[in-house]
Length: 253
Ligand SMILES: [Zn+2]
Image (cartoon, rainbow, N blue to C red):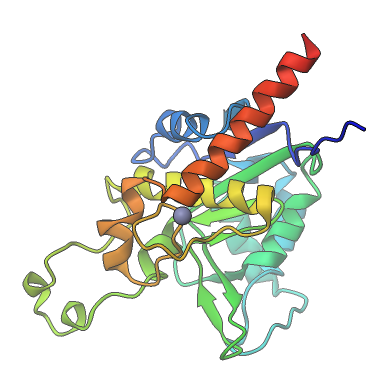
């Protein structure tokens, strides 16, 4: 009896806002294509696709109100207005959004089945941590669609004590900054994590030198993760994935 594994998606769409000039979308596409022999399409900001009027209210509803409570309510008119301005390109800082709620909003506007969507945003995204029941800023929310937050890459992984005591020179590395030239390399690894999540349900790797490591510290992120290299086990995983796709293509020919 013949059997086969159904791949969970046939294409990846990567959304990068056009005003993120420090992020090289083509580089990220090439990196993903090095591991997954599936089409990867680059698109502009996903937040431009739905009607602004609807989306501004939906996003305002995603605001985190209390750091230790996952509760949503009708937004104030001023909050909806702020979202409307943000969707037109104005920047406001200090707003934290519930990552799963934002994904739920965006899910209504995408084909969720055969395509893996990855949304890059500078909005700060958080989810609740199980161990302390509080919101934490996230670098990536693996969901449909997956969301990568550049602000989360800056604020999520912790900085060492020296950063706050004015002795940064002793750190021996530079933490990520908002318009960091290394941001493209960081996004590559989080994009790959979301792909692995969609393939296996397990996005993260325990090996700190692996691009799939969920770095809790800025030092791990900039020293190892953004190099984009995989551990042996994950290299093997992608090799099996590629072999499977090519064998399916042979079957079809
Ligand atoms: Zn690994």
